Amino acid sequence: MMLPLKLEEVSFLHVIKPLSLEIEAGPSTIILGANGAGKSVLMRLMHGLLIPSSGKISWNSAGRQAMVFQRPVMLRRSALDNVRYALNVARVMDAERLAREALAEVGLTAVAHRPARILSGGEQQRLALARAWALHPEVLFLDEPTASLDPTATREIEAVIRAFDASGTKVVMATHNLGQARRLGDEVIYLHQGRVVERASVERFFAQPATAEAAAFIKGELPWV
Image 1: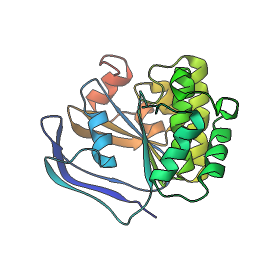
Image 2 (image 1 turned 90 degrees about the vertical axis):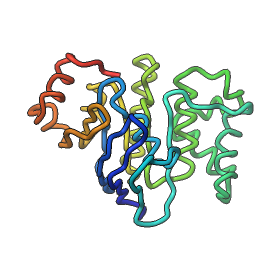
Image 3 (image 1 turned 135 degrees about the horizontal axis):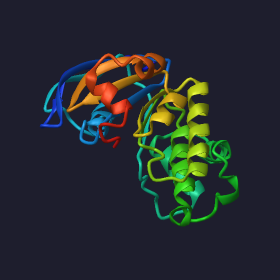
């Protein structure tokens, strides 16, 4: 098993102040914070897309991880080929079967042979999740996966995220949507100006925030994104 993920006195430029954090396997983790708090940068640091300015990030062992962004990049090929490409890059055997299974899992079988770039925003996001699903990641990082989607598409994406969670994948998600955090999260990490100022179960965070910053955020007195 890949986790825990450990960050030891990690900083990044002026965005993330030195922080130490450990992400364990199991319950889903939601990262909340106002605009500019450093949510997306922290996600990219954990996934290895950014190198810390200082400090150390380590996993306890090698393992497969995936990340889905708010605006996923679609290759100039069919939906099916987008998934197959991800599997081929990862050198996964039986890519054709796994790609079709992943599309079925997210409800995109009917559009398998359509160009990915003409799909709706919600379909493209589900396709990005299908690429991740096909890899059977131990950890899935989600950066604002429904920020630009309508309520119907959001519900479809949330259903897929729940399926990842039920399958045993550790979900770490940044979201601006407090209702979504309540629906999908087990614990909350609250960032304020590049620092982790609170970490608690979802129930406790919303019922009894321990810091003035978190309380203001929940009341809508701070920006949500």
